[in-house]
Length: 417
Image (cartoon, rainbow, N blue to C red; front, top):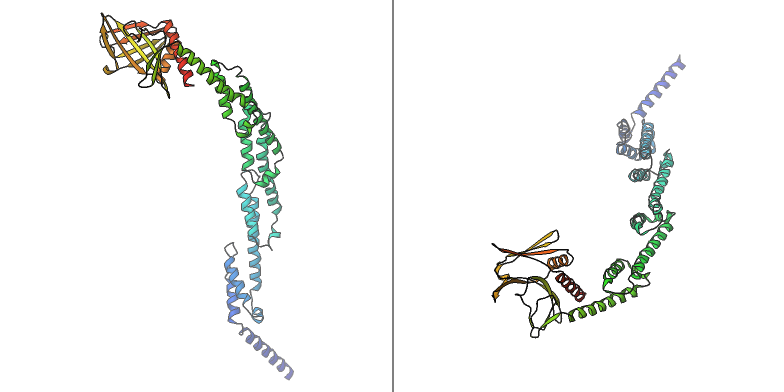
């Protein structure tokens, strides 16, 4: 009985000791357990709470850590959170899908998520190989995007300029590592060289086509010069007969000058020594001994003025008969075309004598007048109507006047170079 009572006393003492130990849990340990208990379901937003709980545990002494009841809960929470972080990376990788040239953002986003993941967790990403394969595939797609336009160049002709330019633009826009991986870059450079040679050869052929320089060589020389001027420096350097073109231009000027002087020598010249000017009238002009006659016949004829520094052309449209028209406009019926020019009273010179009257205009020749004279010279029939308010008069331009117009125009063009 005494032994039994001792056992009971020992048990009671042990219970009291255990109670005293429980009552001795520190406030810091209690606070840490409470923080752990407050974590709740773990989400991607749990990082700060987990960090706060971990900081509280880390601040405990070893004895206080022994008093914790929920340390495993914290460890499980941290593991769950890490699993969620890993899943974010894996989902970003899975979102890449089939790789195309439009996959750059998805690939970069997945790579950024993986890089941001703690290095200790990165080996746990189960589909990391999918990311690296996608990056390789995307790089290959970028290389292919450069190689394809190069492959599309095909046989090089003068019409290849656009496809070569597109291939060059694709290559130049690529990153250096992509450029280094392009397997057919030599095809592009060879195509550019071939196109350069073709461009140069085209000009060489145009220059050779000039041949002996005559008055009719202007079109050929201008075509060759325009083509040569359009070349870049590399292309121009391959033109081995550029000197022929330069000499042809000089020779043409000499031919034109000689032609112009020859034609001017056939015209009637009036000198204005005071103003330092000379006026050249084609032989078709109705001329008296020292001046042209407005009272001889109706005509439409140009003449040339020249000074030391300038050349110009003017046009006289002359009506003469035995009665006034008092014209205010002239209508030119040039084959099927109708061209009208109107004049004010002060533009028209009017006079009379010996029973005849004459009315005429003497006007500058600009672009529209040049076009008119060209049309008349090349026409089958040109009828000119001098028209006033009440009267009009028609006459047909003579073939000899058309010839005179043509020769005067050619002389003017030659003088103008």
